[in-house]
Image (cartoon, rainbow, N blue to C red; front, side):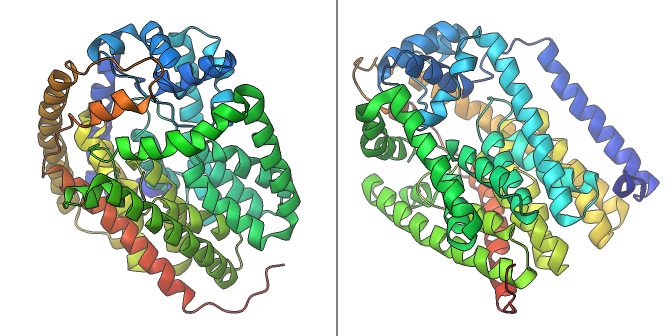
Length: 470
């Protein structure tokens, strides 16, 4: 509580009012049914159900039929649209126990898992930085949770596992570190770079990681067989990347290039190549930072942060993983650039524009992070809070208009053939998206935060010393 108690009385009142506004916004859930909340979870739930039957979860049927039964309100709203579950078979296998529960019950259980994951992330940030818990949660909770909670998305779970892996590596607890790193592979494009770095630079983990990888491969083959597993890697992944090119929720280089005029296939190829180069840089960066600060946790934090910088498929919810590197650098370097990166990445700007219910969280995070570092006049932060709230509410109106247009257009999407790849209808849905130019303002703030973070990390390596990691 020290960061809050150290604020001037006027800012304490401001935060109190913002908390009341946040509570008022969240209270709408007590009176409004969860109609389209859990939009993402229905895909994981049904993916688990389909693999439990040893069917192919990457085809339109039986996935669409399950989603229609599990969430009829969403199905009526997005007729003929099948939400894909683009996770490897072993990841979908973890959802089999939830798929045995009624959808409403499973969704509540999954929300509890997400909330627990957010708590783990804040605790880990505090442990690896030495910060007070309130500061650690101000820097991480909104970035990791606010982007996923409304639709019960996946990222908080693998992000928490990666954070735990960094913590266990820092404490030289090799078995739990390997286990967490392997389980984080439920979102492989985010977790893989960290696993590569740990395998290369921590000899104690190599055998454990190989064993965990073999267990995941065996699980995939057990639930889906070799044909479906091969279909996922050779067919589903390229199709899914292509289906998301026009999505307004994408933060990938591919989407940027597409909106700048590149063809979709070319944009996907460039984004994929950039991802490969960036994760190689991230592995090197993690090694250099680990030597500089004599802290192995950077072997997880740096590659994971680089994994969400561009590429061909990145959502805002996944960018929250970069918070760990930002906080660890800010705690050790005490520089303005690193701390500004923390502030910029702590607020998921686009999410608060799209989901105005959470918008009061943004000024709360900014106040708690900015005041201890720079101590601006309270009146400036109060006025800034008002401006932020007005901005988010105004931008939310754009999002509502965009959603109305998308809903109207998506009602004319034709039903896909039962044996068609699941991304056929998903691409048709994304092609109806309307991207307002103003929405790129939010994206640009996040892009700047990532760029500033990587620049600060690269500058830190120039002063690296030849520390032998014991």
